[in-house]
Image (tube, rainbow, N blue to C red; front, side):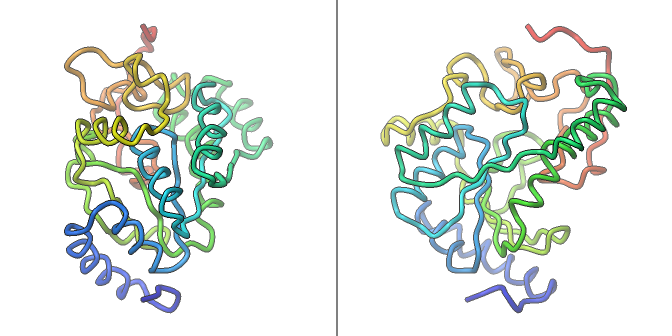
Length: 256
Protein backbone atom coordinates (compact mmCIF):
# COMPACT_ATOMS: atom_id res chain seq x y z
CA UNK A 1 0.00 0.00 0.00
CA UNK A 2 1.44 3.40 -0.93
CA UNK A 3 0.23 6.98 -0.72
CA UNK A 4 2.28 8.54 -3.48
CA UNK A 5 -0.57 8.72 -5.99
CA UNK A 6 -3.51 9.02 -3.57
CA UNK A 7 -5.62 12.16 -3.79
CA UNK A 8 -6.99 13.98 -0.77
CA UNK A 9 -10.32 12.12 -0.75
CA UNK A 10 -8.51 8.80 -1.11
CA UNK A 11 -6.32 9.63 1.86
CA UNK A 12 -9.32 10.63 3.93
CA UNK A 13 -10.96 7.29 3.25
CA UNK A 14 -7.70 5.45 3.86
CA UNK A 15 -7.29 7.17 7.23
CA UNK A 16 -10.68 5.86 8.35
CA UNK A 17 -9.74 2.33 7.31
CA UNK A 18 -6.36 2.57 9.03
CA UNK A 19 -7.90 3.93 12.22
CA UNK A 20 -9.91 0.72 12.64
CA UNK A 21 -7.00 -1.53 11.69
CA UNK A 22 -4.44 0.10 13.98
CA UNK A 23 -6.58 -0.39 17.07
CA UNK A 24 -5.93 -4.15 17.10
CA UNK A 25 -2.14 -3.88 16.71
CA UNK A 26 0.58 -3.45 19.30
CA UNK A 27 2.94 -0.47 19.16
CA UNK A 28 5.52 -2.17 16.92
CA UNK A 29 2.75 -3.30 14.58
CA UNK A 30 1.25 0.16 14.41
CA UNK A 31 4.61 1.69 13.55
CA UNK A 32 5.40 -1.02 11.00
CA UNK A 33 2.09 -0.33 9.25
CA UNK A 34 2.86 3.40 9.22
CA UNK A 35 6.21 2.66 7.56
CA UNK A 36 4.54 0.52 4.88
CA UNK A 37 2.42 3.46 3.72
CA UNK A 38 5.30 5.46 2.28
CA UNK A 39 7.84 8.00 3.49
CA UNK A 40 7.12 8.18 7.23
CA UNK A 41 8.48 10.89 9.52
CA UNK A 42 8.23 10.82 13.31
CA UNK A 43 8.63 14.20 15.01
CA UNK A 44 9.81 13.90 18.59
CA UNK A 45 9.77 16.52 21.34
CA UNK A 46 11.82 14.11 23.50
CA UNK A 47 8.91 13.84 25.94
CA UNK A 48 8.17 10.50 27.61
CA UNK A 49 5.64 9.42 24.95
CA UNK A 50 8.00 10.26 22.14
CA UNK A 51 10.83 8.37 23.82
CA UNK A 52 8.63 5.26 23.78
CA UNK A 53 8.18 5.66 20.03
CA UNK A 54 11.86 6.41 19.35
CA UNK A 55 12.80 3.31 21.33
CA UNK A 56 10.41 1.16 19.28
CA UNK A 57 11.69 2.57 15.98
CA UNK A 58 15.28 1.92 16.96
CA UNK A 59 14.72 -1.47 18.57
CA UNK A 60 12.75 -2.84 15.62
CA UNK A 61 14.90 -1.06 13.02
CA UNK A 62 11.85 0.46 11.37
CA UNK A 63 12.32 2.67 8.28
CA UNK A 64 10.83 5.76 9.90
CA UNK A 65 12.72 9.04 9.82
CA UNK A 66 13.07 10.64 13.26
CA UNK A 67 13.18 14.43 13.48
CA UNK A 68 12.99 17.05 16.20
CA UNK A 69 12.35 20.78 16.28
CA UNK A 70 15.33 22.37 18.02
CA UNK A 71 13.64 25.70 18.67
CA UNK A 72 16.56 27.50 20.30
CA UNK A 73 14.60 27.82 23.57
CA UNK A 74 14.58 24.20 24.74
CA UNK A 75 15.63 23.07 28.20
CA UNK A 76 19.23 21.86 28.26
CA UNK A 77 17.95 18.54 29.60
CA UNK A 78 15.95 18.12 26.40
CA UNK A 79 18.90 18.96 24.15
CA UNK A 80 21.13 16.51 26.04
CA UNK A 81 18.56 13.74 25.61
CA UNK A 82 18.75 13.98 21.81
CA UNK A 83 22.29 12.63 21.70
CA UNK A 84 21.65 10.08 24.43
CA UNK A 85 18.69 8.67 22.51
CA UNK A 86 20.64 8.50 19.25
CA UNK A 87 23.44 6.57 20.91
CA UNK A 88 21.15 4.23 22.83
CA UNK A 89 19.02 3.17 19.84
CA UNK A 90 21.38 3.66 16.94
CA UNK A 91 19.14 6.21 15.25
CA UNK A 92 19.82 9.56 13.65
CA UNK A 93 17.55 12.34 14.90
CA UNK A 94 17.43 15.14 12.35
CA UNK A 95 17.42 18.64 13.88
CA UNK A 96 15.28 21.35 12.33
CA UNK A 97 15.95 24.86 13.60
CA UNK A 98 14.29 28.24 12.99
CA UNK A 99 15.81 30.63 10.49
CA UNK A 100 17.85 33.31 12.24
CA UNK A 101 16.30 36.03 10.06
CA UNK A 102 12.85 34.95 11.27
CA UNK A 103 13.97 34.95 14.90
CA UNK A 104 15.48 38.43 14.50
CA UNK A 105 12.35 39.76 12.80
CA UNK A 106 10.19 38.37 15.59
CA UNK A 107 12.37 39.94 18.28
CA UNK A 108 12.33 43.27 16.46
CA UNK A 109 8.53 43.30 16.34
CA UNK A 110 7.57 41.72 19.66
CA UNK A 111 10.73 41.50 21.77
CA UNK A 112 12.60 38.28 22.52
CA UNK A 113 10.01 37.19 25.11
CA UNK A 114 7.05 39.01 23.60
CA UNK A 115 5.00 35.80 23.63
CA UNK A 116 3.95 36.61 27.20
CA UNK A 117 2.22 39.80 26.08
CA UNK A 118 -0.46 38.57 23.71
CA UNK A 119 -1.91 35.52 22.01
CA UNK A 120 -0.89 37.01 18.67
CA UNK A 121 2.73 37.29 19.77
CA UNK A 122 2.77 33.77 21.21
CA UNK A 123 1.38 32.25 18.04
CA UNK A 124 3.89 34.25 16.01
CA UNK A 125 6.73 32.82 18.08
CA UNK A 126 5.43 29.26 17.67
CA UNK A 127 5.14 29.89 13.95
CA UNK A 128 8.78 30.95 13.65
CA UNK A 129 10.31 28.40 16.02
CA UNK A 130 8.05 25.39 15.45
CA UNK A 131 5.65 25.53 12.51
CA UNK A 132 8.11 26.64 9.85
CA UNK A 133 10.74 24.08 10.93
CA UNK A 134 8.00 21.43 11.04
CA UNK A 135 7.14 22.16 7.41
CA UNK A 136 10.75 21.41 6.51
CA UNK A 137 10.76 18.24 8.61
CA UNK A 138 7.64 16.95 6.86
CA UNK A 139 8.61 18.00 3.34
CA UNK A 140 8.05 15.03 1.05
CA UNK A 141 6.48 12.88 3.77
CA UNK A 142 3.46 10.67 3.16
CA UNK A 143 2.98 9.81 6.82
CA UNK A 144 3.48 11.84 9.98
CA UNK A 145 3.92 9.79 13.17
CA UNK A 146 3.24 11.62 16.46
CA UNK A 147 3.14 10.91 20.19
CA UNK A 148 -0.34 12.37 20.72
CA UNK A 149 -2.41 10.68 23.43
CA UNK A 150 -6.05 11.12 24.39
CA UNK A 151 -5.18 11.62 28.05
CA UNK A 152 -2.87 14.58 27.50
CA UNK A 153 -5.55 17.28 27.40
CA UNK A 154 -9.19 17.97 26.65
CA UNK A 155 -8.23 19.08 23.17
CA UNK A 156 -6.74 15.63 22.49
CA UNK A 157 -9.43 13.48 24.12
CA UNK A 158 -10.73 12.17 20.79
CA UNK A 159 -7.36 11.60 19.11
CA UNK A 160 -7.73 8.79 16.51
CA UNK A 161 -5.06 6.26 15.59
CA UNK A 162 -5.06 7.60 12.03
CA UNK A 163 -6.36 10.80 10.48
CA UNK A 164 -5.99 12.80 7.30
CA UNK A 165 -4.13 16.07 7.75
CA UNK A 166 -5.67 18.13 4.96
CA UNK A 167 -3.44 21.13 5.64
CA UNK A 168 -0.32 19.07 4.92
CA UNK A 169 -1.96 16.44 2.67
CA UNK A 170 -0.63 13.45 4.56
CA UNK A 171 -1.76 10.65 6.83
CA UNK A 172 -1.13 11.26 10.50
CA UNK A 173 -0.57 8.19 12.67
CA UNK A 174 -0.91 8.46 16.47
CA UNK A 175 0.23 5.02 17.69
CA UNK A 176 -0.08 5.87 21.39
CA UNK A 177 -3.55 7.40 21.16
CA UNK A 178 -5.04 4.88 23.62
CA UNK A 179 -2.08 4.67 26.04
CA UNK A 180 -2.61 6.35 29.41
CA UNK A 181 0.24 7.78 31.47
CA UNK A 182 0.37 4.74 33.77
CA UNK A 183 0.87 2.46 30.76
CA UNK A 184 3.56 4.80 29.44
CA UNK A 185 5.41 4.86 32.77
CA UNK A 186 5.25 1.08 33.17
CA UNK A 187 6.57 0.55 29.64
CA UNK A 188 9.42 3.00 30.19
CA UNK A 189 10.44 1.28 33.41
CA UNK A 190 10.20 -2.20 31.90
CA UNK A 191 12.28 -1.26 28.86
CA UNK A 192 14.65 1.07 30.76
CA UNK A 193 13.97 3.81 28.20
CA UNK A 194 15.92 7.06 28.83
CA UNK A 195 13.60 9.96 29.62
CA UNK A 196 13.90 13.65 30.35
CA UNK A 197 14.84 14.16 34.03
CA UNK A 198 12.38 17.08 34.13
CA UNK A 199 9.51 14.57 34.24
CA UNK A 200 10.49 13.70 37.81
CA UNK A 201 10.47 17.39 38.70
CA UNK A 202 6.80 17.87 37.86
CA UNK A 203 6.98 18.48 34.11
CA UNK A 204 4.81 15.84 32.39
CA UNK A 205 4.71 17.93 29.19
CA UNK A 206 7.90 19.70 28.16
CA UNK A 207 8.26 22.35 25.49
CA UNK A 208 10.35 25.50 25.28
CA UNK A 209 11.82 26.56 28.62
CA UNK A 210 10.16 30.00 28.89
CA UNK A 211 6.76 28.52 28.03
CA UNK A 212 6.74 25.50 30.34
CA UNK A 213 6.34 25.23 34.10
CA UNK A 214 5.90 22.31 36.47
CA UNK A 215 2.27 21.43 37.09
CA UNK A 216 0.51 21.56 40.44
CA UNK A 217 -1.18 18.53 42.07
CA UNK A 218 -4.44 17.72 40.31
CA UNK A 219 -3.70 19.77 37.18
CA UNK A 220 -3.96 18.21 33.70
CA UNK A 221 -0.76 16.97 32.07
CA UNK A 222 -0.45 19.98 29.76
CA UNK A 223 -1.44 22.65 32.28
CA UNK A 224 2.17 23.80 32.46
CA UNK A 225 2.30 24.76 28.78
CA UNK A 226 1.62 28.47 28.07
CA UNK A 227 0.15 28.60 31.58
CA UNK A 228 -0.59 32.34 31.39
CA UNK A 229 -3.24 31.82 28.70
CA UNK A 230 -6.77 31.26 29.96
CA UNK A 231 -7.75 28.30 27.81
CA UNK A 232 -7.40 24.61 28.67
CA UNK A 233 -7.24 23.71 24.97
CA UNK A 234 -4.32 25.97 24.10
CA UNK A 235 -1.99 24.55 21.46
CA UNK A 236 0.98 25.79 19.46
CA UNK A 237 -0.54 24.93 16.09
CA UNK A 238 1.46 21.81 15.31
CA UNK A 239 -1.54 19.55 15.74
CA UNK A 240 -4.40 21.97 15.14
CA UNK A 241 -4.70 24.92 12.74
CA UNK A 242 -3.23 28.01 14.37
CA UNK A 243 -6.59 29.79 14.40
CA UNK A 244 -8.43 26.84 15.98
CA UNK A 245 -7.44 27.74 19.53
CA UNK A 246 -7.41 31.42 20.35
CA UNK A 247 -6.94 31.67 24.12
CA UNK A 248 -7.53 34.81 26.14
CA UNK A 249 -4.31 36.25 27.52
CA UNK A 250 -4.05 37.21 31.18
CA UNK A 251 -1.30 39.21 32.95
CA UNK A 252 1.83 37.11 33.10
CA UNK A 253 2.41 35.41 36.49
CA UNK A 254 5.79 34.14 37.60
CA UNK A 255 6.44 30.44 36.88
CA UNK A 256 6.86 28.99 40.34
